[in-house]
Image (cartoon, rainbow, N blue to C red; front, side):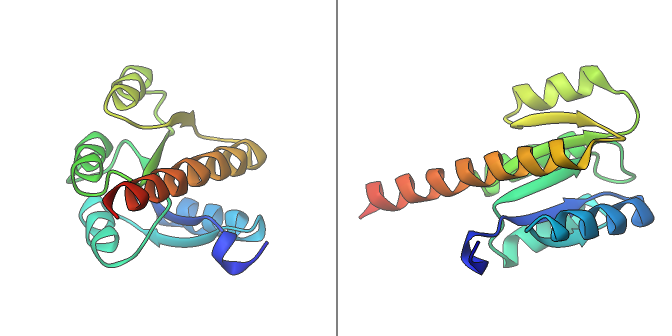
Length: 137
């Protein structure tokens, strides 16, 4: 896997210890991971960096995950989003899927399942970008 092939992941979770540990585990599985701890920080990072996949916690202080997802879909439509929650919030997860999230996973998540979901989401994101680039040229 070349560095360009590595999924570029933005991990958004207010539980800093969890996010740091998960980022490390995803990095060992070939992802290039940036971690932020709030919805507003996620949107700022997306405005300055190219990201393939956002892993987004639903329950955060300030902007919750659904609000962040709405902004991602509006401002960065090529970015694929995977929702992740530890609160068993299935109705919010279903709502997130309706807003355009690709997947909804519950903590604790098996790292192999998450890594597989990230890979599929990154492929979708890159295909979306390539199609958009071809149609605009």
